[in-house]
Length: 230
Image 1 (spheres, one colour):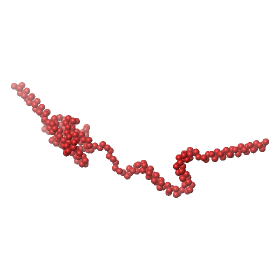
Image 2 (cartoon, one colour; image 1 turned 180 degrees about the vertical axis):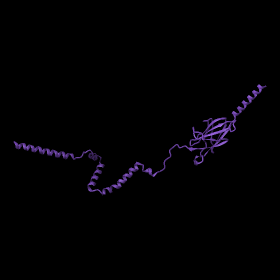
Image 3 (cartoon, helix red, strand yellow; image 1 turned 90 degrees about the vertical axis):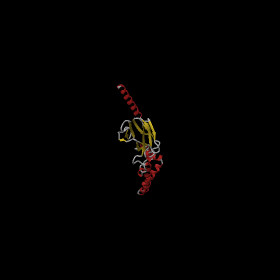
Image 4 (cartoon, helix red, strand yellow; image 1 turned 135 degrees about the horizontal axis):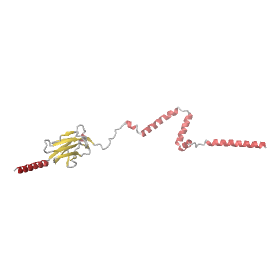
């Protein structure tokens, strides 16, 4: 009799545990705008939401709501796969025999320390934390930025020189003006400028010619002296 009673209790316990394991729930949530975020954070329809990287899948509707059906007891990690906005991750634990069957913890990002215990039963709202920035924001127009442009600086310098050059030439005498005009003419002719730079002018030839004439005169004088001695 005792053996039969023990077998009956063992069988009843097994049936009760199996019923608890088969107990499922529907896990419902809504993707919402976080307080302080602009209205453009609203496009939350047709966004995939997963439990344990695809063990359970849901798709948000036009109001941002989603539901996981027939979720069995266990521990799950919920992720929102949105390409435009970043949502926190939720670690959900479902225990059908506990007084509070569903408990959740919220994490701002993967690997972050637990921020707070998140109430997720029977329904919950999950706010977006930020929008993804795939491109660098274009800097606004700045007047000072124009003066960092080398081409603009060169144009300003050239315009200033054109304005100041006549005033500078008014205080010069005729010789300085002539020298400056000659220098500007040589700068317009690269060959003449190189010849002046490397000393390729014609000033050396008259000096050599004068030396030859002086030498020739000396030789003639010497010849005349020899004739007189004879």
